[in-house]
Image 1 (cartoon, rainbow over the protein chains, first blue to last red):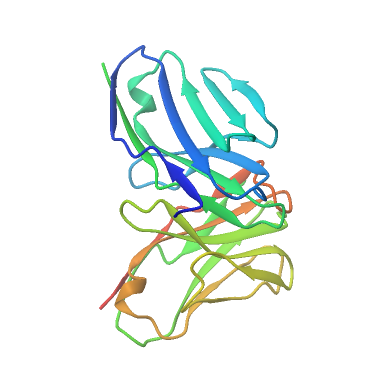
Image 2 (image 1 turned 90 degrees about the vertical axis):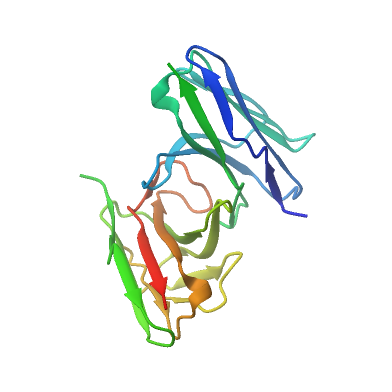
Length: 110
Length: 114
């Protein structure tokens, strides 16, 4: 079993929809939770970072962490065609070891 | 401009011919890391470094070596490349030890081993 499991997708939504991207993890030592966006043929770009249970908002993006259920989510409100990309969750231990999900490819149609 | 640079960007080589992929950052970051990305597999961590002379294995270290003699540089060495190391490689750096707040990725190095 993988330490981090990400909903596989692909996901296709109309412009303006709310998007929900999800990951689960198995290791309680994980302490830091990240979401990255990766456009085709580019390096990943850090979108959201958090280390506590609860919600963190940044513009149209909300990261949600539930440590008791070992579940993390990224919500995108009012999705735009420019949000079309692959989204990767990643979880770190305090010692710097980093584990990524396999990614979910999102397409937002105009 | 804050950036992580990798060289070369593209490389075709043959099995067994030693190669080094360089990674350099200009942000005085303590933490640096190498990843490989294969289709459908997300990113997998190869090695990471919390600071100068401190390195540790990630999930897929076999066949790779790293060194961190200076804070800004973190080269990835393939002593005897094999075809299963054909992949897209990313270097990354961040300000904090163990955290990825304010993390920057390099542009990637696409490696083909024949």
